[in-house]
Image (tube, rainbow, N blue to C red; front, top):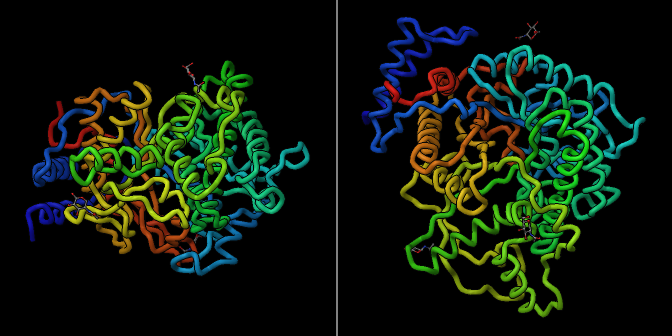
Length: 524
Ligand SMILES: *[C@@H]1O[C@H](CO)[C@@H](O)[C@H](O)[C@H]1NC(C)=O
Ligand SMILES: *[C@@H]1O[C@H](CO)[C@@H](O)[C@H](O)[C@H]1NC(C)=O
Ligand SMILES: *[C@@H]1O[C@H](CO)[C@@H](O)[C@H](O)[C@H]1NC(C)=O
């Protein structure tokens, strides 16, 4: 057994015998012992763990989303969503042929979940509102509002307040009401952006007093590229190199319209913040050749910049415009497949941010490559890189999950250098595996090393990181990854009638970190 595993082993043994009271401090004799082991843990690995305290400005929290935990897919007046339809009618697309019908049943068990979150010492809970619970068919009218759905979130938000946990609320976490897909083609229609804006206004009205941190759209890259380009995600539309960009434009319009509504009608009264949540892996160049370095930068621009650039600068990144135009010409098209923004649209979108966000899990490698034949077209041919996984780095669950904590520090710096010195929230970070084990030293190590990278970014690079939301406090329905992909600090037994939640070692570790605000034995 290597030294690190040995320390982790003792550590977990200690934690198993430690009680889990719902209180702030864990210091007792066992707590002290745990802390000592905690210190050893920080020395037991080649990489130096940052020994600074988390600054007060860095808020710690946990995150999840309605379609992944709530279940109750047709209860309480909720309408059908594109993910309900996709999983139920195209089971071959989901690795274990599962559906989100029941998930963790958090719709009924939310109170238990909030106490789990409180017990972890979280200051924030990032959750999402299911559009189809508030407006079952998506469309807004006074009569269309579902009182049961409104009551569910009102009660939950009131309980969060009692527990002194700050909510961070996502309005759209991929769960488009199916009716909007059927009527309009979903995000392929700019009308969906208008309808989203009305739903957003309704939520600002209903919940604006309780919620100060708003997120419009979560991970538009997944919504658009997987949903309307490659078709691996709901609604499964296959229009590579075309649908994804039309969708990208429409979700940006949706975000911007919601942001402007908040600005005009709610900001003065509610004093909240609004942002879009964007995800990307970090891309590390395969070599220091200028071609590979450019390939890595291009990849981040296609993944993050496609959404970040319009929000911060009012238009697509130049490299994306150039590449899609070049490919489109090669394919004999008169116009670029990338839709343009009108001057009014640029004005609408430009500057619609109150903070920067990043969902980060893994780092990929990027090499330059030649032009693929013009007979094929896709987002990936437009991006024009060879994407590969560094075999030297450890892996998480799915194939592309390649762990390199320095990548998080690098992406934070990239954001600061590209968009300016704004407040940044890490809205997701965590480790999935396919084992479901309760003793999860690999997850502890992942969290610790990534938080250490955050501290490096804060103290060494002066990145204004103000939030870290761990994904996730419990296992969930991981979309096409089904229930086998385990990503929680609590295990969920999907076979038990009560979807029993069982604490993993990482939950205790996270609680210790949230409470001590320090990753090593003694912080400075
Ligand atoms: C990427 O480039 C590096 C450096 O030239 C090389 O060692 C590596 O094999 C390349 N990887 C792929 C997948 O092409
Ligand atoms: C976006 O706004 C900034 C700041 O006002 C301005 O400098 C920039 O030219 C705008 N971008 C576009 C594309 O209009
Ligand atoms: C399930 O939960 C209910 C309500 O909390 C409880 O009465 C029941 O004993 C639980 N059943 C099991 C098997 O844990």
